[in-house]
Amino acid sequence: MKALLQTTVLIFITSITYGQSIAGHWNGTLRVQGNQIRIVFHVTKINDQYEATLDSPDQNATDIKVTTVNFSYPNVSFETSGIGAAYEGIVSGKSITGKWTQSGTALFLTLLKKEFPGAIPWADAFASATAFTAMWLMARKKIESWYWWIATNIASIPLYFVKQYVFTSVYYFILLIFAFWGLAEWKKRAAKRATIAFEMDTVKNN
Image 1 (cartoon, rainbow, N blue to C red):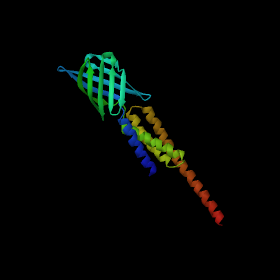
Image 2: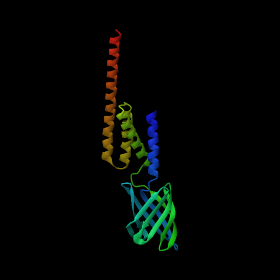
Image 3: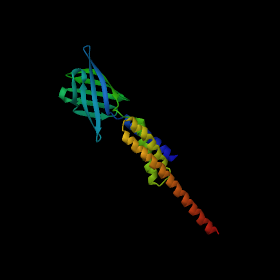
Image 4: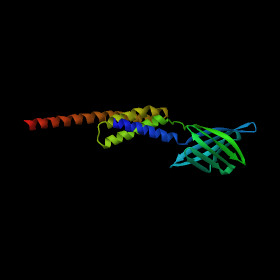
């Protein structure tokens, strides 16, 4: 029960943390004098630091370096000095509502998030949390650790297959077989120790 509670808490924390990340593709549309100009921010997180580039497909502009990215949930700002533009907004789920400023003109702009290909937050959180629980139980030499390794591998096989990492999916399938084998071996040794202990107690009582 304790391990199950711990895993549930880890899944929740991991998912919340993921949800507060701004890494991904953010799409929005500026409306300027009757024209629509699409804006796309590509945000990545490297060593706990955010970096970003900017695209403006309707102006045939791509990979414009965003000079500064500041994020302190829920406030976020992007500054692109190369084109004299800045954006400040408030993050709410998978949207940012804010203001685009360029050449002294301020325009309302809402950005919507599109996850990076292969991102499956709840599935990733479940696989990570069960693996952590398995390692914690194994460090305490608990046989229950094998059940959590089995859960981790079962979750990871379809997860990586969907992400098109076929070899990784096969790798977790092999680990699943090892996990079942490990569980069987631990059960066998536990039963053997119990038998020896029983026989020793019988000898002492006689």
